[in-house]
Amino acid sequence: MTDASRAPGRVQQVCLNVACAVGVLVIVWFLLSVLLGWSLVLFKTGSMAPTYPTGAAGIAVPVDAEQIETGDVVTVPRAEGGLPVTHRVVSVDDPGTGDGSRELVLQGDDNANPDREVYTVTEADKVLVGAPYVGYAVTVLAQPKTLAILTAAMAALTVWVFWPRAEDHDEDGDERRDEDDAAGSDGGLAVTGGERVTVAAGRSGGPTRAMLREQERHHRGRRDGSGRESPR
Picture 1: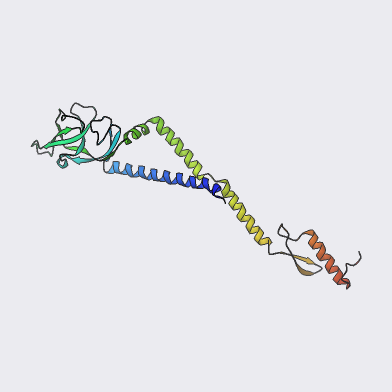
Picture 2: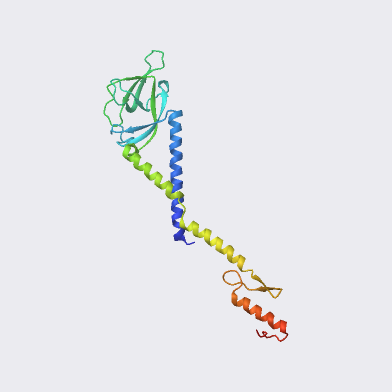
């Protein structure tokens, strides 16, 4: 088999490996989000630039307010409702309520002043790590049309990867032909005049008619003692 004939099989193997890796990552993320409460934070504004510019995404984990320190980037709900805010902690105060809550003053890295609101929380989501542009990809992937296209593509990829290839059938056929040729190369046995005579095998794996006729003439000549074929 040539390298060109092996190429489709290699492409299929690479696609299968990539699909398996993506599937493992999805399963791991699902378990982390369900068991540990991990979440994705999308930065839709540039208030946290340059650390987290517009379109960035970060991985956040839930923490108790007592564990929050100055310099952490946290996501907290707004008092007036709406979308939560993700900014850096510039100060932490204990309100003295005894319930473990903390008063947080937040400020965006790209903002000149701290937020006007003081956030009183008992817990928050702390951003551990982030990467630029990932938020754009997550936003696109979350669209229903994108999910439908990806599902159809994954189904087509699965069918293509596991569909029997023509060269697989060719290899099986070649192996069977090699076995037949090996069996036929041992020669054939022909019985003529009560004697067991070994004759060479033809291309089909058995004696040809011409070989059998020659063997018959040879034995007729031996029976009449002249070495020639006896008259009919």
